[in-house]
Image (cartoon, rainbow, N blue to C red; front, side, top):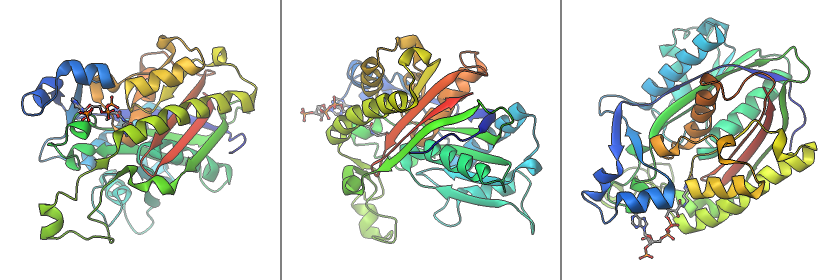
Length: 333
Ligand code: UT7
């Protein structure tokens, strides 16, 4: 749990691939239906990256839009962090590729690294960036949540294939001059005993890629949907209640809650726990599916751009994901 971090989100951006995958696409070859997917998850469609594009393309576009929004140039950045479970390469970090694409690589290049906290990634990144800014040596940090889940999802597994989508969001975090502004409260946590609730068995140093691992489809996500669902409902509710209670706020104070877009039923149960009306919850899962670490910042960017969020608003972001990991941040914009 952390205290007040005096930061401002100076700019945000988001990017999704053009190609839309409808629920009917899955119904055409799997034992599922549009009706089942929509009623059990809230997803109508999701995006899929083209074969000749990568997660870096999405991260780059989102970053450029965030810089434009912040009226900044890449050379004003002090640090780049990419939160992702689907990195461009295992080595080096996606953030190194991104730094180069932004045109700021070289002998005096700024620090760059990836952060691995799955769907909680952006919240971990935001809290980390805010703490490092508070430390005084960094002014402007680029935090990106970018995923191409389609590259690691088993198209034959009906419980995961329908769920995930590709996308990216980016935010520029800077020190604020306004003492009211910033992260009022945050909580980051994990329970490593549940590591196999959502995991990719091979491709790491535990079981490197081989003909066997490919034949056994071990490079895809495995998920115990029911276990994750039960855990997520309780954890999301708990995170929201704690953030409000520990800061002396009530749900009515919130301009908006932005939950990880995991499953509409999990999101609604969290919202209903504190009696927030549906219009106060950001939703993009209907159009983009579960985009893991990108989901919160993509929804945040959308709410900022269409005017649902403005300076002075109180917003609560909350997520859980593989690990299992979780995080929340109550932010005064
Ligand atoms: O970012 C974090 C990542 N993960 C999540 O947030 C996932 C959390 N879990 C979920 O969202 C849900 O568990 C799912 C959407 C994955 C599944 O929905 P559910 O209502 O919890 O279904 P279930 O797992 O309890 O399974 C009920 C039935 C099963 O059939 P049987 O065993 O009862 O015959 C599943 O095989 O639903 C079946 N099922 C499907 N049926 C039609 C699972 N996926 C599908 C599907 N179409 N796509």
